[in-house]
Amino acid sequence: MKPKGIRLIKHPPAHLLILAFILQMTLGNFVFAAEKVLNVGIYDNPPKVFVDKDGRPSGIFVDLLNQIASIKDWQINYHFYTWQECLEHLETGNIDLLPDVAFSPERKNQFEFNTVAVLESWSQVYVKNNKKVQHLSDLSGKRVAILNGSVQQSSFRQTMSGFGYRYTEVPTASLTEALSMVSIEVADAAISNVYFGDMHAPAYDLQKTTIIFNPVSLYFAIRPSGDTSIINTIDLYLNVWKNTPQSLYYTTLKHYSLPATPEETNPLIIILILLVLITLAAFFIILRLKQHQIKKLSKQLKDHQRMLHNEEDKFRGYFECSPIGMFVADARGKYTEVNPAACHITGYQPQELKNLTIADLIPESGRKTAGNHFNQLKTEGRAEGIMPFKTKTGEIRQWSVNAVKIEEDKLIGFVEDITEKIKMQDEQLNLPERLEQQVQEKTHELNLRISELEHFREVTIERELRMEELRSEINRLKNKQDTH
Image (tube, rainbow, N blue to C red; front, side, top):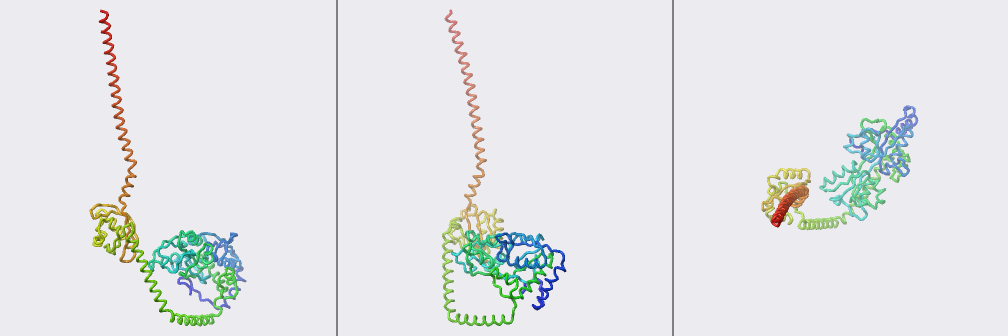
């Protein structure tokens, strides 16, 4: 089935395709005398497309394109970029053709695709060998490395969001970087197409999980205003090769160790064989399920109940012992649950807080900030900020609030009283000004003391001079008396 949005061509019988192929090969160079120069973007995604250890462009897409180019006398200039750069250069026209592009509804508005899929692929999750990840729920709260700008990125976001699982996305520029992130434990899991992941995961001590999603068909792409004769020619060759056993297409897949069963050799026989195999498999599966289904379902139910009970006990322990205030509220802002730290911060007892709403703890000066914070939380699912709050005694203090919406009618806020921290920061900010003021005061005081000392010195000198004059006058009078 061809993806919606791609031009559909009703393919003629195989013998007519082969005839057209021979005519194209024989007459092509006479019809198109001018050499076509193509700038082709490639990135690191072996075995589909990559640069080998000798610096040569390689891979399934490259080998097939090179064969067409040698027949059609095309000159191909390969340009090695990251995946995101390849998309940008194709969109701006810096390159003419991009191989290994997964079709998606979003991309059909950006690019034009050839109609014959080169490969079918899907995405798989890879983790370290000592990690146990079997379900999407195991990735909830985890760090997931994923190629930036890829269809896996948007598909995984949509899938996790649909189940209500939150995770931390670690965007990477290449699939190699994604696997490396998990190997060095910067991320907990990596997402890759199955071809690249299976080939390279063992080198990073990673294993693939049972989690697969996003089956896609892979094509060549040009920009909408590009040369459509390029993809039309590629389609012609792919049609012939895929309808011809032992053709270049199948030998290329075999060279890169991919399954290479010719397509449409005998569709009726293949369908009948598949139907028989499916029927037999279904018969044995149903037979097996009849024997063990009740026992397995019962065990799964008990395990699930035990897991939920353990998770609930674990959360309750975190909730009660957390040093950070935790407030659970409904969509109207009414508190439904609070932990001991929340009571300590506000001065209220648990039941007293449950009779209040968020607005009851916010002073008039913080109502606007709190309202914006609450609306953002309800619409975006997450909000954080600093705002004032009132304690039971009426004291105004400062909260640091980090809140998330865990259900449509359940909001949880993680609250810390940072009043003292803000005061210390303010004191540190005002410290230079206060020190300068103290220096000025001490300098003024010192100048006054110096002035007083200068005055005392002058008075003392004047007194000494007068005393000296008085002594001289006494001596003069005494000498005068002695002469008489």
